[in-house]
Image 1 (cartoon, rainbow, N blue to C red):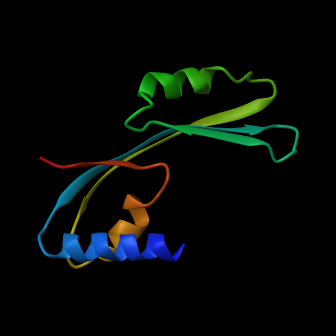
Image 2 (image 1 turned 45 degrees about the vertical axis):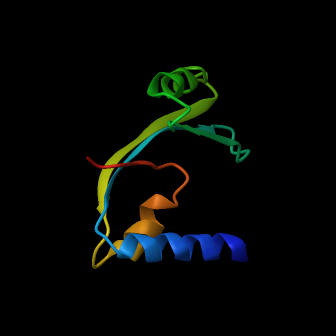
Length: 102
């Protein structure tokens, strides 16, 4: 855990030296069992998982036993005054995939 924090701090220090922007996108399928067992599944698009794979996952659950929703959000995150808060909120969230903005 300490190594992760050191790496994270290093990334933030490097990023603070110049202003960079990232296009962050969330595209996930989240399914919860209707029988109150607490079973849930989540599958998100990343560099390796396409939106089509997320859609296939979403449609594979039977409506009679699972409630599924799609989580979609797009954010442009830039270093600056709130860069650290933005990094914590979006860069490190598992279900956001960020690309450097052009």
